[in-house]
Amino acid sequence: MGKLQLAAALAAVGFSPFLASWLYYEFAAEGAASPYARGNAMPFDRGRWHMDYEHSRHFMVDDLLRTHDFRGWTRPQVEALLGEADLTQTGFTIPLGEDYPGRESIPRRYYLDFGADQDGLVTGARFRCAGEC
Figure 1 (cartoon, rainbow, N blue to C red):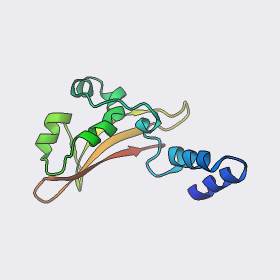
Figure 2 (cartoon, rainbow, N blue to C red):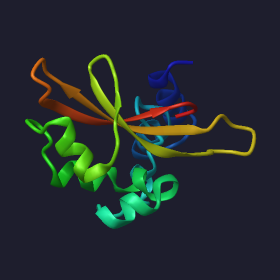
Figure 3 (cartoon, helix red, strand yellow):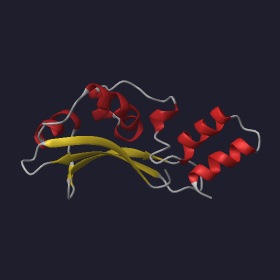
Figure 4 (cartoon, rainbow, N blue to C red):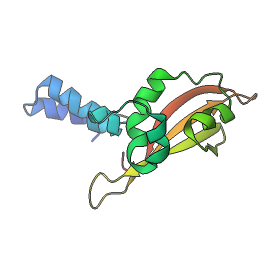
């Protein structure tokens, strides 16, 4: 069953359209299951970012991206703020940690991906979830 069919089926069996839409965007939409989308968001705190890699970085991403426009930054500038980045084919990425959505589930791993142009300047940044997202 596709994502839109799931939302329609929920609406058809008595879920309100609002509730069906909320369920779709929380659990079935592309990029769903980001921890900060469920009310666990916290403000970006540089000290905590560097101290608590596994447990809080991914909760700070929403605020970080809202308060920092990384476009035009260089990789060393980003690393000075956020720590070491791994190179990718289109730029670089910073691992944000992981969590386990359920006891028998594949863990979700979170990343902050940065696109870069041929001069090495950041063209954009986005949150990415890999695993059972």
